[in-house]
Length: 229
Image (cartoon, rainbow, N blue to C red):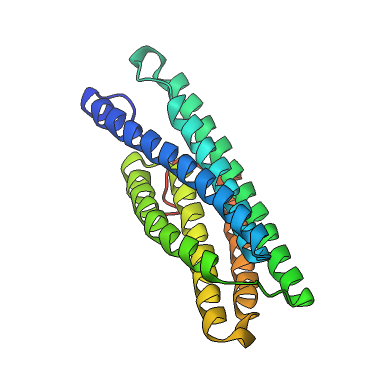
């Protein structure tokens, strides 16, 4: 990764500001989304909507890690070039591994929720809240995912690339909530479809988390986004 030419540092400085803004927006959005989802999920006896809110707070934790990574990046200094490079690389490694662990946590939460819902044959009182919340969330999360993917490539950051993957995972969960809510409104007998799909996604999230952790622990880890972009 490049930190030290004047031209690159100015460009990187601007990109870092964008990354910070995106992380702050992600945190604010997901906190609001999580609170609203848990509230309406509890009111309508919708376990999937409650766990959707829990997933939002997992994304908040991930975004906080990325925010810390870029707010604490050491500034270019030719006299300490090697030391600064090692410091920034160490932060990339810690944050990448942290996001990998959050992926596994997300996987466990998703599979647990879906399994319990299938066993107990839980059916929400209404699917309207889930449909509205997921519809709004999809538009915002898609924008955030594209922004993070772009910044990951421009900054060549493994941390931001992993965060983009986390946002993509949340988009998939949101789409399942949207589809499940829509199907339940049309066909009451299809209550189990979103839970079945969620279990499959949960397994994929676990694999993604393991891959991210292995990449962070690899001797070839260079802080770049080549494994995720």
